[in-house]
Length: 108
Image 1 (tube, rainbow, N blue to C red):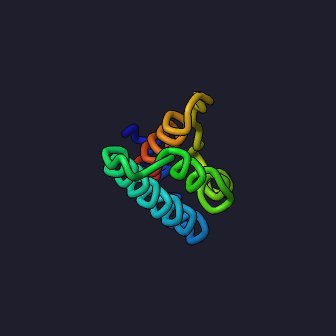
Image 2 (cartoon, helix red, strand yellow):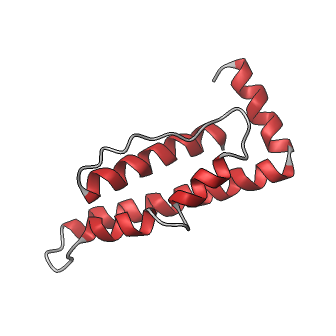
């Protein structure tokens, strides 16, 4: 991590509003990681249908993806960005989950 990023990260954590946003994003990342792991497990079960569609719906809504975007605007010196492959439920959800995990690691 660069010296500048370290200063921004420490400054962000001392601001209560920013610290709360970071905390919420980290919690959302943990939730998304849990979804991903559960989907991997359920994929092996022939009884589980539409696994990735359910993950997609759980991620792309006002409580997760839209909230991450809204909260990330409150964190100076960082930007949440992700590439949407716009292909399958699995690839779209996985791309978002991986980008969120990377972002949470940078700000948390």
